[in-house]
Every structure is written in C-alpha cells, then in structure tokens.
Image (cartoon, rainbow, N blue to C red; front, side, top):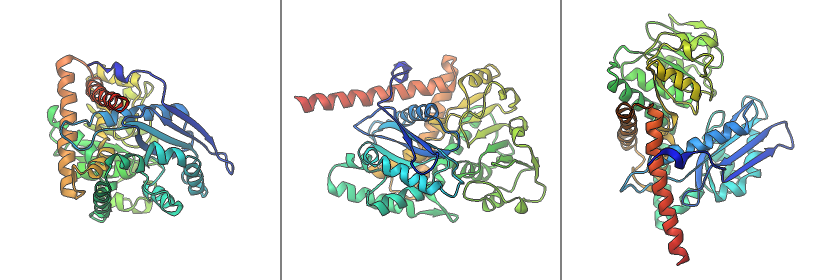
Length: 407
C-alpha cells in the first residue's frame, strides 16, 4: 500500500468565521470523516491561517490512522482542526473562544470532537461546553460507543483519567510529552545514542514541551537549552528542568527572576545552533525551514509540535543524515490516549497510560526508522506508508458498513 490514499484531495468541509466583536478570524477544516466523525484540536495564535489549519487537519488524519491496531477497541476516526487568528494573551481571548465555539456548535456536536492545542486550554473548552449544556467536547466520537452502559463506563474511565495527577500535574497535560519522550528515546537507542549525558534542546515549555523536557531529563538526558516566547535559556551543564517548569506561567513563559544558577540567556533565534544530540521543536508550526535548518547541530529532530519542519528543510536535513521523527508519530500520544481511555483499551490510570504509550509510540517509531533504513527513505515516508495502510483499512470498513446498511 502506497501513501497515495493520503495524497492531495479536497477537504470534507472548510469554514471561515469572523467574530462580530473583535478582529478575530477563525477557521475549521474537517479533512475527512471516518466512521462518520473526526477529531482534532483548536489553536489560537496571532497570524493563524486557513492554509495552516488545513495542513494540521490533514496531519490529524495521519495521526489517527497510524494507531489502527487489530484487536483494539479504539478504531481511528477522521482528522479535523480549528484555528483562531487572535492573540491568546489578549484580555478578550476567552470571549473570542466562546463566541467561536458557539457559532460552530452544530459542527462540534455532530462531526468534530475538539480538544486543546496551542494557545487554548482544555479546561476552558470543557468549562464552556458545561456552562452551555452542550455535553462532552468529544460527543461525536462518544456516540460510536453505542449502548448506554458502554457510554456510562466510558464516562467513568474518562473521569478517572482526568482526575489523576502526577507530581501535582494533571495526567492529561503529561501524556503528550511522555509519548514524545518515548519516540525520542526509541530513536536514540536505534541510532546508538546513550540517553545518559546526551544533550537536548527543547523549544516550547507549554504542556507538550514542558512534559517532554521533564521526562527526557528523568531519563538522564541533559537539557542544555529551552526556548520560551521571550528568549533562549541555556546551561551547558544541564538546566534544572523542575525549577524552570515551576517558574513558568500558563503560556509556558519562565519568570526570569527565578532562573536557576548557571543559566544564561541568548536571543530567541539562536536555539537551532546550540550544540546538541536531540532537538525537540515543541511550540509553533513552520519554525524550521530551508533558511535556518543548516544551523541544526543535532543528529535527531523529534517533532513535538505540529508541522514544525518544512518539507524542503526535512529533505536538506536527510541529505546530512539527520533523522526527523514526524509529528503524527511523536506527538500522537495525547490524541490516542483520549480514545484508548474512551473505548476501554486502558483504564485511565497512569500505569496503564504510560505502558500503552511505551508500547505503541515505541513500536511506531521503531517501525518508521527500521522501514526507512531498509527502503532508503525518510522516517516520515515510512510512517506515511503505515498511516496509508491504516486509513485504507478503515475506509474499507466504512464502505462495508454502508453497503450493509443499503442492503
């Protein structure tokens, strides 16, 4: 099976929304429906575009499809994404978010299971849904469970999963970064990099980047630099990650008055050139392109953000022997975790959550790297082939169900 099934095609649905009370513009793209529904996050950032959201929705379809597993209760759905062109730090941001969700509520309640993304917190989405009486933000996928007893059991698992905290941090804010760490450690093992003492740079200290930095550090990796919206924070001997995480605000910006001893700052555009073994872009899309990829010293790039490396930059990096673990593998843990819990593949405990992430993200990363080495292609191309096989199988199942219904 080739990757043509994932090739260019019209989106199932695209919507452009204009706020009546501000200059905010929003976008929704449902790439395709599988099993009648789609899932994907909603982001808010100044400068967000329809093209960006379209690319993210396509990536969500891949992120779902790679997790098709024979015998699992979770069968992947389609990919969707939302974006709002507005500054999430603006005092009116929550109002913009609520008006966007209100306008899109028919789509949200019928087709699109929505979650958090850059600049939007799950807590705010859930609070708006609860106050408006819309039920669950994942209601479209939840309906696939069918019987009332199944939905009741799923609700209990989700409640348990979202009540779990680890070292005082909610589990749902950790699973994504834990999965990225699994991808990174698997790739390091296959490329002969000893995690203990290896150097890593993490761009972004939100929930994804912060959790990745935490778990890489606990695996023995030396985090020599982190990047927030202000500048780069560097310490060649290794940063005190826990201290930095405790000093960040809701947007992942570190209070400079609380920097650990030995840390120094560099301009924000210096992060790519810092000597390291592993580079983790965990913030914005399209931050690594042909104009700056030559600065990268790492032999391994692990995409914790969505679409951080351009196609042209990835080709240039591949020519230099730099492996890029694609976003739809490395950062797919949060999305898959939701559905593993909902459908009952795991009970929502931290122990089962991490065990499943170890197994699935580890296996996907290993398969992508080994297939790439065997076929002389990039890890992304190998992972796309895995996603294409999954997508073709899911679409075949949808067609069989439709044929049965007509008959």
